[in-house]
Image (cartoon, rainbow, N blue to C red; front, side, top):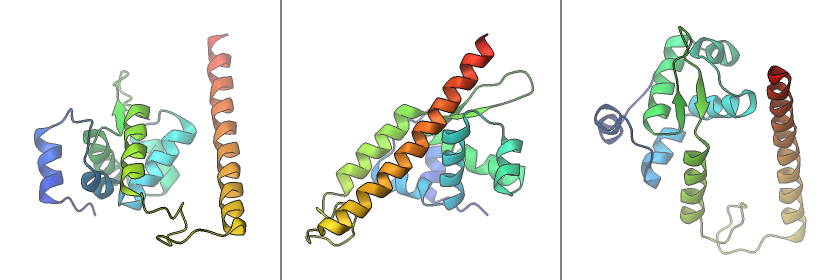
Length: 155
């Protein structure tokens, strides 16, 4: 079930081309785990249709469509009809704006530890950096795979 606040509902219904959200609206949109999973899926696999996304996430196509509608109107994903197929993809610029908003919101100095004002230990910092490194390696591999797929299609 998708719960849409009054302000977010207004944004969806009356501003269909909106690409900029304030921090509170961004957190409302991304506060639903399924939407974050959809973004992660599109990020790792590239453009995908609602049925494929639904199958990958194990939810109904109708539920995926509702989540995609919210994400699209928030400007985080875009779609372009290709015949009968409507592939959805990530809007990289919008995600970068989300990163900037998050950076602006989280200025407590915790560096991801959640302990406001406390300096993380070297061990905690190293652990966090190693986790970031693993995630970046996975993302780099996904990007390299996508590049290979595109190059293969062009031949």
